[in-house]
Image 1 (cartoon, rainbow, N blue to C red):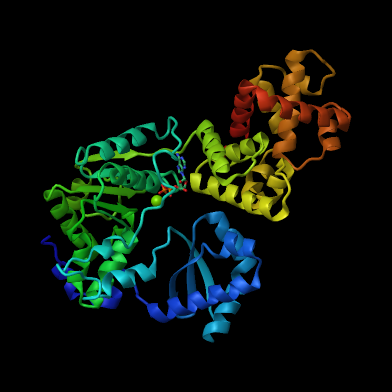
Image 2: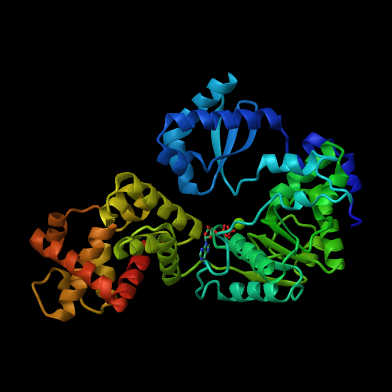
Length: 474
Ligand code: ADP
Ligand code: MG
């Protein structure tokens, strides 16, 4: 490899380069470890595993402590329930008062960075290679092709990724883009696993762009740019995740560009992900942009409701969680934009189910996820539902209130009642009144009946899903 840090990079003051301030990493890391250990004794093991274990220290700057959480709603939860505890524990171990803030991002691991740039000799073997650096960032064993659920939204990306795994270099670079939590990292790592299975000994380096950035800055700061280059010298496949992160960071872009070019020139496979396509990425130098788009760029779209349902079913099965159909539907219809959140909701339900030992019910799920579902639950009213359902089944809204009992209107009416129970906070008697003064037992019966039918009538599932989606779409 002939890449080196750019002149620009060399001229910049190391601690402030690219706008990133490196704090006192080692002490902060130690304090964070101690803080976690303290908290582990303070809360139940299940709570610790569910909410505190996943937190990672991003940085400690002055009086601010920034922790990363894997999902936004975990952020909400942890913020509500553990923010003060975290600050107290930090104070107890370090004597410093801090304000705890959260960042929803895949965590970069300071200890890996330290490992990656610190050792000048101890990581090297006889031939001067530093193979264990390359093992520093393992692929997640859960992210395989087999565990990836496909549907219309991601079929093409899936097929292209498989092709890359079958024929290295077919598309170089291979560029996956799309919104947050849609499976880009999963697919990228799946390529890695597949390659490993087919070609034992293949050397894969997986890094987030943040890691690339921080490692690079750290290398400059510690005057170990050689060590940085070592990271890439012996790889066959380089994967960099979320490269939008280096947008606007000129020195890092420059370095990335060199690394990238020399790898491609040497016939190595480069795989990248970003939140946008190469030509939509802002603040990326044109030269780099056109290089990024010179292989194959594929978009991963948000999964449609059937795929979300299938993902939930697969994940629940993998967790050994018995997820009733109506709960699956509730999650699949209400959490539409992001698989990571879907998964997070599931994890939370799993944690609670384990804690209480009780079977999951729709009421329980609604209660435990109400911060997540509330927005939609509030905005839909009984009248909206009656109107939408009537329109959908091509009956008159008046039939919702009328005493008619023939199936053509009775079933849609039951669906409407069911949806009222699902999507609003109205009680059975309340709903009965809104449907022409019916008794609350009629409403309960309707909900039960629809619930039963949903277990065995896929067409009804589709109707109900669609209706929920139309009603809750914002
Ligand atoms: P991104 O990198 O696009 O932000 P990730 O790859 O991290 O998203 O995916 C978020 C989570 O959702 C991961 O746990 C991943 O396994 C899961 N996931 C996303 N899409 C799928 C899918 N199609 N099938 C199974 N799991 C998925
Ligand atoms: Mg990702």
